[in-house]
Image (tube, rainbow, N blue to C red; front, side, top):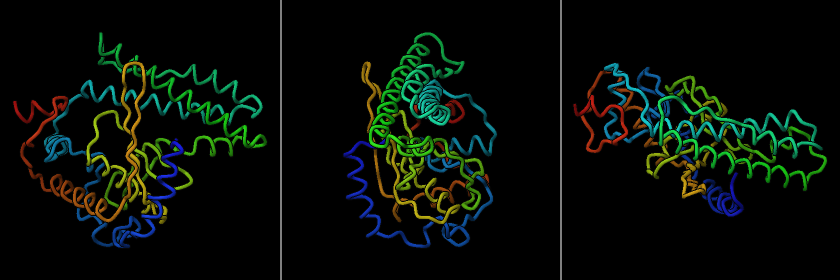
Length: 301
């Protein structure tokens, strides 16, 4: 849910810019049958496998898809997945409650129902690490709970005769965990976008770490897949960074254009990584290696 300032940024600046700087037709997702959008290899990759550049050379992908090296998720990865699930559970529970409750009772039922939502913290964490993730899950759930109830109450105040479908669309105008079939772009048939806004199409990706420039590749990939499926332009992306300061949730959004430059970058990464997997090319070790990467031992011994 965008703030009023962010909505003005989108409506008054970014959308007009997108209209003026029209994307070249050859770089739209619906041009999937022709170069450069048409894939050169039949190696279905996930958007994250194309977009992740934590390993600058993509050797983690080579080790996993070519060498068959299997590693478990690190603590950082487990924490990110649990926090992501906490947000999704709140939104999906809210939609279910709105559709399953008479409008005149929805505020009461929503407030009580969201407070009862629980998120399973995966095994593999214990001691202080487990307690810290549980604390963050509680903070994040309370944060989303308050925002959802406030937004629903605001819509009901303005539209007292709204039905369940209209209330859900107006108060929660984001489809979460949207399944997408990326085969027309040579990608996996089982993609899931974190979120897609309904009224001004914008792809949303949720991150629980530091800001990196390549994070925009994910929103670009999902946008192009949506264009390949529905043949409607998707020109905006939003990477939402969630952090914690003491007992507070910190939220920062990177709302950006999905322009020619971003599309070309995504296609170049896709083609390079497809070639690496298809031809079994070892790209060598990267210059930097995150401490949490499970492939460090395979790379460095």
